[in-house]
Image 1 (cartoon, rainbow, N blue to C red):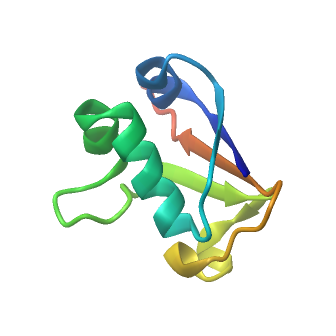
Image 2: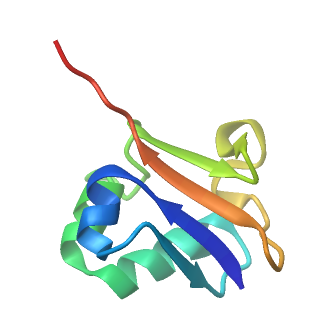
Length: 90
């Protein structure tokens, strides 16, 4: 199982800050989370083209997935995926 940490509005929608899923890649992890937590979660996570929204920071074991293999980054047992929405204000 992969450990997932959720922050901000994603944690609110999911009803908690941590969960586990069975996934072999970042893409399959995000899909599984969207299926589990529903349309509102999916809308917050993905843009209209089906790509993760730019303001959602995705980390695999503390490393930015964009510097790994992006959505194709492989996940193994006990890996940790963090989904952190960017915070802005004025």
